[in-house]
Each structure stands twice: as C-alpha cells, then as structure tokens.
Length: 193
Ligand code: SF4
Ligand code: SF4
Figure 1 (tube, rainbow, N blue to C red):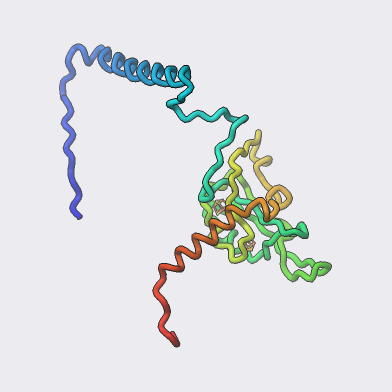
Figure 2 (cartoon, helix red, strand yellow):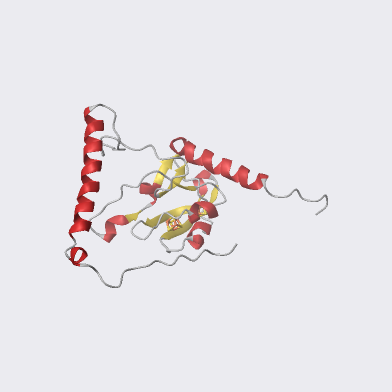
C-alpha cells in the first residue's frame, strides 16, 4: 500500500483581519455557544445530549478489558495465589515490583511471597505482569483512584494488593476467554510433532 501524501497549503502572509485574531475568536465562541445551548436544551428537555458522570457519586462500569492497578488474587484461605516465581517482576518494564520469596511450612507451601510490593508511582498499568504470570495470581483491576502526598505512600505492600478471587471473577473470565480466542487461531499440530 502506498502512502498518500497530503500537501497542506498555508498562507505566507496573513491579512489584517487574521492578524487581529478576531475571525478565529468569533468562530471559537460560535462553536462553544452552539454546544452550550444544545446541551442546555437537552438538559431542560430531559434528553441529555452529553455523556456526564456525576463523579464520585456515580461511577463508570469499566469494561472487562479495562486495565486499572495490578492486584494480587487472594484465595479463600486468605493466602495469595502467587508462588513467588518472579516472572512478573522480570517482565515489568518499569521495575516497580519487588518480591521476597519464602516458605510457608505450616500450610505445606514450598514457595510463596513473604513480601510483594508494587511501587504504584512507577506502575504504568501496562498489564505485562498479568500476561507473564503462569498462575493467574496477579491481574489488572478496575481501581484507578490512586493518590498520595508523597512517593512513599504509593508503595503498595502485599496486604494492600490482596483482593479476594470472587471479586476478580470478571477479569479472570475475560483473561480465560482471551486465552481461548488466541489459541483457537493457532494451527493444529501435526501428529507426532
Ligand atoms: S502493570 Fe506494568 S508497570 Fe505496572 S507492575 Fe505490572 S508490569 Fe509493571
Ligand atoms: S508471575 Fe504470578 S506467580 Fe509469579 S511471582 Fe508474579 S504474581 Fe506470583
């Protein structure tokens, strides 16, 4: 496909009217007024013409593909699903995940995250940690309301990151359907290959 080259012609010399900026100002005011009165009419007639959310009283139900802050899946027994393999830490492009692996002999667990921190001031919600995880133990949530007065308060520890698995069902379902969709496209392997 050849690219279409568009040559934009610009006037070298501006006329006196353009130099006053008045035509552009009037044009801008006309557009603003048109939209204002259209929306006012819609509001008065009970048929809103603009999509407005009365935040924070109202919240948008983000689609399942939405990527908010990453969180850790918490099992029914209260423990994280994470096995501290470190793949998410390795995949993270901003290096904001820190994991300290350890053992949990009283639960018969050979490897779990003794500590799991994410520096949210550096996280860019890219979702690579979620993609790298072989255990569905870290997923992107719908939480985007993160604020702090300093960088230290943006360091989320394991307890801050744990979310019960049943509250993440929609995201987990979406991930599984995406996995099925992608793998359905792969060509079938020849026998013995
Ligand atoms: S979402 Fe991206 S930047 Fe944030 S922790 Fe995961 S991999 Fe790192
Ligand atoms: S990739 Fe998954 S299982 Fe491995 S350390 Fe990260 S969250 Fe835990």
